[in-house]
Length: 527
Image (cartoon, rainbow, N blue to C red; front, side):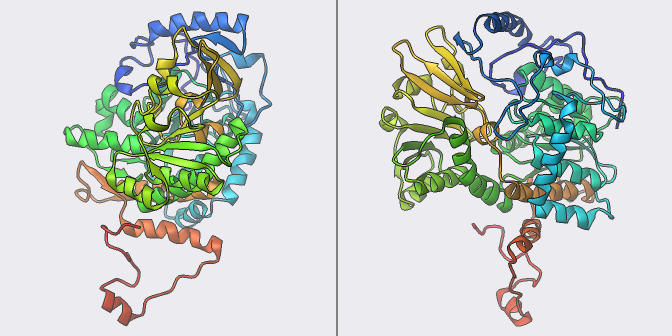
């Protein structure tokens, strides 16, 4: 790994923007030189933001004063200083070892971040067991992985596991608000090239990914992505580097959708593993994790009481199902919007009313999106919402709520607390917007470490499989994780519950037509 890349750049000073991150295709050219299409807009917005700081810290017309500091309910809060107003890109930071190939908010927070990582390790038995079993074999020796995921204590455990298994890594964040600054500092202190901080601008976001792809003495051969941004940037800006990639592992609905689009158009010239639709990821991370984290994020950010509240949840996939179970359990009246008749029928059988959003938008107290689509909740919908309505997004993409339509001169944005904005209409009506429409459970709370252990183990096995696969096993297409690996990931976590699996007898295995060691279900089986 190169240690010569500094996080200081003279040509591209950081500016503040409240625009949501857009598709990489619109901001690919010359990311590092500052000549892409959004730079002119950045300069204009920086003037407005400076004026905002001088006049009012909490309230402005048509421009959000949403937090870009390190605070979150799951994050270190003691980092306020005069340096907070200086972009990490404009500061030269060095770890105690002299390592400087990183760019984080404040390297001095590393001790606190290391404690968070240690706590996460205790609640992540699967990935730690995988690390222990494979550490001697080093199945990722010579793997050079570009990572673009959420950077928190749990993903830090995955990152350190990959290095223990022999890989070299360079890492950036896939979401501008989900990074735990102290964890990023701990990784940088340990010698990992990390480029991420909480509250990045859009320009910072692409700069960080670019620094992970293009570095001195660095030739990446694997991608671990969450949302497809690293894949998209490398394909568009560094096609030569992209051809050297042995495999891509993607864990989000949005990123998987992008991969299938690339495959369909003939632009995907490397094999990719769709981890999102593996059983262990879909069921546990999407359903069971969201069942807990939706309540956590809403409660921490708004202090709302759920009993009797009317909630409309857009999308009844695995994320939607998990959210609805939790909300119904606490006494909410839940409505569902769906485009898929099968998912809609499931919602009906589970006791929920399936409606069109316009039918309930005037009366509901909370609106949650979980579709992976765009413009699910529009300005027209938000104009009809009642005073105090809370709106948030549980899908990976920040396009589900049309936040840009709220950035107009007739509306006032008021910061309430970190990741919580009031958007106020001329008549005084206000709605409560969480995380500016970005992934609310990672922006306003934290994920259960145990569930992330399942996903992390799945990602690690997918990387090992693609990296070590013999030539010809995988063509340039998108693949699901082999079911045998799904079952192995599940088995790594069963000892935590003191669970004991029943074993098939030879006669039983023969009768069922199964191998005694699995896999136990056909690929078409729906869990």
